[in-house]
Amino acid sequence: DIRSADENEASEWVDYCNNPSNKLRIKHGFKEPLTIKIWQLGNETSYGKDKFILETAAKKTIDFSKALKSVDPSIKIIGWGDSGWAPKMIEIAGKHIDYIAFHHMYDPGQDLKNSPLRDNEYRKDPAATWEILMNGYKIHEDKILRIRNEVTPYKMPLAMTECHYSLRGRNRCEVLSSWAAGVSYARLLNLHERHGDLLKIATSADFCGTRWQVNALMIPTPSGRPFLMPVAKIMSLYRKYSGKILLK
Image (cartoon, rainbow, N blue to C red; front, side):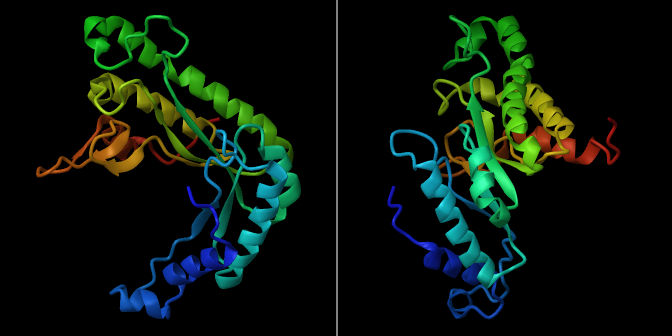
């Protein structure tokens, strides 16, 4: 929650990661550079009671982008643009960013009074669970279309840097361990590809963790072998079999 670090510290991080001669990284045992080529400035800065003022965030984005690119001109910068921020962020800082970021974490049964997608209620009505999950892509496409409409006049590529289902009881919500959830996520991946003319970066899960069911990789504790959640298995299958030819 401490947001007092400035663009100088940010540029030091780029140097630490990307400069082949960075002494501190080498001292830490990493002789070769980490070569991080894409950096996002701002994360959910338009959300919640502690959100930033848009104009201030845009000016800070310029300051940070200049500092980072002065260290490594080859990197790409993502600016934050969710919650209606995209047009103004692009107008103010567009020359200094390469992508606009947004997030979408949602419950596909959010509009239903008695949705079974909570805790482990899905076991009581598998048919309803299946129907809700199979239509989950519709809510997701609505969000993508909204942000598309905002950036289309500027031709700014999109980066959806967080995206997954967010269900009540997500620490132990077993429906996300089911193949029904996996197939539903496959529809989201199809949706991401259909919007690939503008949507250049898109995730479908947090990377790894020990209890949140929205992770791609689960790490059992205190011991046990890591395993892929259905969303990660779907992503691995999709990467292998989706092909290389895009149809309009």
